[in-house]
Image 1 (cartoon, one colour):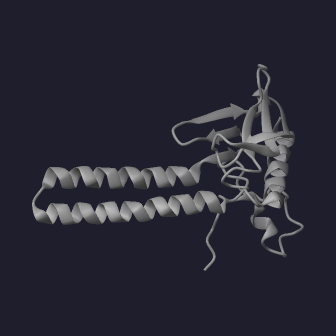
Image 2 (image 1 turned 90 degrees about the vertical axis):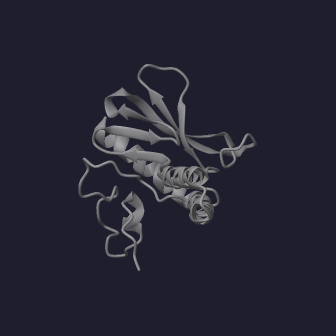
Length: 183
């Protein structure tokens, strides 16, 4: 059963679409992720949803036992876990004709294409799966017109690209292509 992911690399999945637009979009005004969520990100969200199902089931048992305030607290914790899992899958970078959006767990930032000085790939120490441990890898860096230290958009050792170097390269090329086309 094919799932309709709205990603830029879906053109690479179909042999018939190999000669199509390299960015793979029909509607460029919508915010789209230029890569698929990685297996580490999806697996973490799946485990969180599994845990949330147990918490919600325990809320139902607690409610049947007669303790409604405790059941409400359990249901609220389960709902918070579901929202966190959905937000965990949404973390990443999205592009549209308006600019580049970096979505985090708690907040999102949008940078217009006119405010971007350069987007480049650099070899540097990167965090492994977002943990404090650093390893040598590649990162896509965003430099704004205002200057300052470049922001790291995503890395080869993040939850989306760990062990998938060619996916990282396709995503970096797609974002650099969007920047070149809209600046």
